[in-house]
Length: 390
Image (cartoon, rainbow, N blue to C red):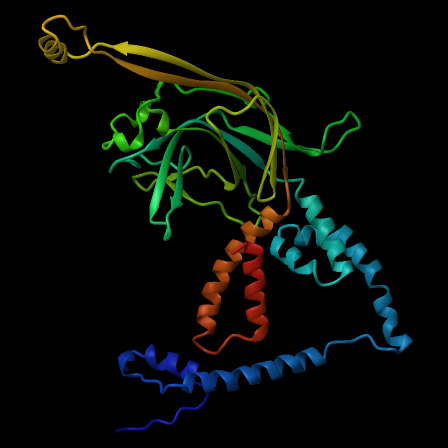
């Protein structure tokens, strides 16, 4: 057997051998424990280099002459925030998130930049009404994420509840600062007419249960399949923002206009109570008023089929009456007025962190071909995961 002596750490050599055109990767074998030993030695070297770089950075000591420049740090940073940092960092939510726990000064700077950025967003609400469950093999035939909602459930998320809605006009939102007149600072509808929308479910059969409707032939007019209304809040990032909305394409692969980034969804019951309502979800707060909420019930007597009537007459010697069935129906209707929306900077942090997390996964995958991750890289990965909420 031929023995090769390779210089350097194991990961880099292993990657080079496995990717070499003239050498089969299946021939590369690594002895148990070798990679761990190599990683430990390489990590120690990397940490030593990082520690040396850290020791060369200036530190504040007891000498007044050395600390004098640092005493002006806050004053200098205030100037930078006013004239530069706001522009440079307002579109870096994850960076601002990482700055806040560093010290009081950095927390102050990050909070100031974030509070200004969160007032400049392009937001909208899409009201969706008359949600109906979709069943069978063709449940997502013609699927469009603009009017469909898919909820995963089960231990492994292998089951889905699919609902289709009717879309009302989008409601654009614009930030308005607090006023002495009593208006709260937040995002208010621009197209006020579209901010008031209504719904009518149509006649729904009450007595039909899902277990009885094996083929779901009656799902479009059964009460059990009616899911009420849904309000989706969208953020439409600008080209300067680091977050990119999901692409949309039709069945022919043609690009469709982006819907934006969904930052919250608010479900309403079939018959919400009338009155003013405030709900919050993941840093988004919405206020609306239920102006009308109705549920009208009706009953209908159905005559039995002629064959059943004939059998009944024979059993009763001709003296029986037709056997009928009473069906109960219900119809939901109502009207809602959207008032305002408030958002927390955390929604931008989460959206940005999710993209950064994907970028880190790809970047670190390449790094691991050459060396183990440093402690700093591992800590940053954990911080990004924390910011993304996963």
